[in-house]
Amino acid sequence: MSPLNLGGISQVQVLVRAQTAENSLMQAISLLLIAVLVSIISGQLIRLPFLGASGAITLADIFVLATDLTFIIYALAIKKSLKIENKIFFPALLFILSASASTFLAAGTFKLSEILISSLFLIRFIFYFFLSVVIFNVVTYEKVHSWFKIILSIGTLFTVVGLFQFVLLPNLSFLTVYGWDPHQQRIASTLLDPNFSGMIFVVIFAISISLYLYQKGKKIFGFYPFVAAISFIALILTFSRSSYLALLVAVTTIGILKSPKLLISILTLFLVAFLLIGQVRSRIIGAFTLDETAKARLESWQKGAAIFKDNLLFGVGFNTYRYAQERYGFFSPDEPLGGHSGAGSDSSIILVAATTGIVGLSFYLFFLLTILRIFAKRARQDPLHLASFSIFLALLVHSQFVNSLFFPQIMLILWFILGLIQVYDT
Image (cartoon, rainbow, N blue to C red; front, side, top):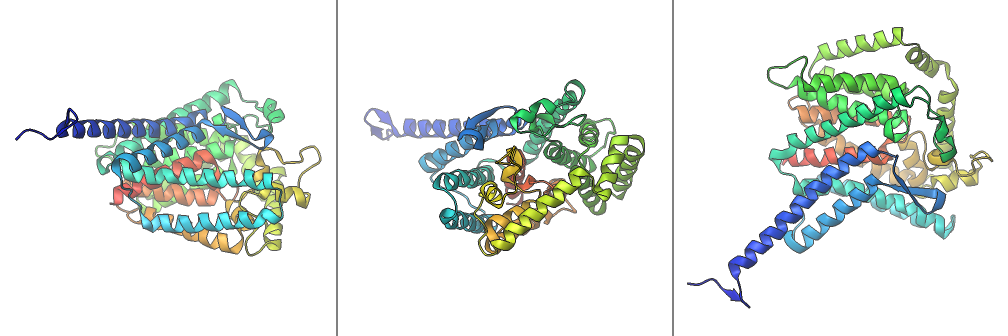
């Protein structure tokens, strides 16, 4: 029997073309996912102005959007199905709906243009979170370890760039005219902020150490120890107290669950750094004596708490925080919109509370708890779960001192890891 002929094209040819189109789109999505990770290296250096002084688009935004849209085309036109992990998708949806409702209710308080601008961050949050859905549908179980190694390799390049910045461009005070803080003699890397870069160094350190501890025939001078060493050095040179604390949380978690020797070793190295490096010592002591930075952080928490207290149920509206602070008179006259940091609080939880109220905060905490349970599932038996669990605990602590849970490049890594772990657990 001859193949069915459809206007000169056999059924076999139709199937072959369909399979070719599917393979091409899958390959394009995989390349875009790599581009998403590579965009971390460019960080905040490439920023395309968007809506005037209120915002900008980075390469990460562009590649995340391109990845999501390409996957949607693939899912609707070719695959015609979409796998959703309800365990995490439902809590995420509840928070997104509550955040949307809080912004909608804020329409009576803020200008329409301000509401529209504010809603764009929620859209960004949705697109970044959707990365985990893309990965859950595209990545196979056999490739999960490879993707963690890709994260590690790209993170290593990011770390090396940071070390070069520290040596070649240690004074970033010239960036103050563009709204950035005047960091000097600190690794800020391409994120132009030691605190956020420091959290990425913690991620790289935790992954490399976790993979090393489960490696057969451990080599002290192998790739994983090398990556752990340079990420540790880079982290120390950020002189970021929030990142130091995040590192201690990650190391303590890994130490308790897998290797007490690691905990003792890192604490010893940290003590040596404290004793030998004056800037490390002064930064840590400054946290207890309330130096200028510590006082500014306390003030940020107090401002967020005041806004939350006045808008207890639904908050002022998700991502309207900049405009809320302006109305409260929290900005100085010479910087009426607060610069790059004006849209956030020095605590991600306080920010969610102030902008979405008790309702949104409850759903957000439920969302975070669900992620924590997913990562903790096999943290004692598996390197990927151990790395993910320690990273997430470290991030939860880190985000109470800077708004790292909503920082684009950190969100990108978090949702990437979440998607990979969900694939790994199926």
